[in-house]
Image (cartoon, rainbow, N blue to C red; front, top):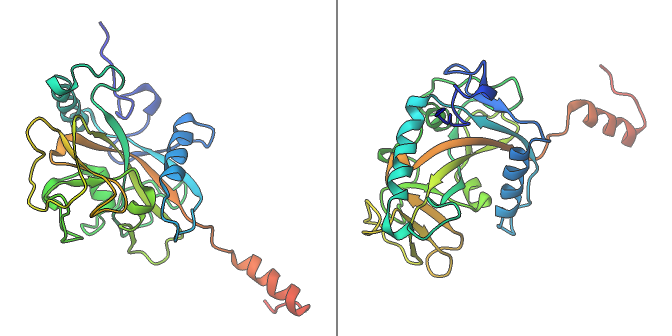
Length: 258
């Protein structure tokens, strides 16, 4: 029996030529996966006070088998849970969820910027290289609504609140889209800042809007419950200098000196 290779693995036939020094594969806008991520991003943009931006690019994040196998083992463990015994569709309740973080390089700004940087403060590249680490919870934001865990959300506009471009020359914003094994979630509407794991019989905590939250968030407490899967590049295209010059020339009806 042939072994199934994870589509996010370097070893998958579609990812030939990719490896540790080249982890991002640019998806064509006609690719069904691009369409799925773009649709989820648009549907998840719920802040009425923030104009919905355009998705300019989606990169698939590739990893080694050694990085992906613990995720597979965790997913198999969740599948064996009695709480999910009668779940037939998406039995592990695996979801694609957004995560915003710091970027101190220009990764993803265009199709040629696909090499990870080595800056320790660039959380984006650290996550893509090594995946998430629950011990880093609270590094950027001290408030932990549902305790010490790894926070994601279906609300792309909420994840946007946590993005930061440390390189001021960056034109766009970026977010991670991760595969998350949600399993049997414990749903809460009130804060529970002391949590370090979900309640017994559950695999995650899902915060629902209504009391302490305005927008949904999903928290897992095991590093192997999550792996980065896509990088979304979005924002408004800055006006080029040539367009600005053309506008000024039109307004004043006189050519600008070179």
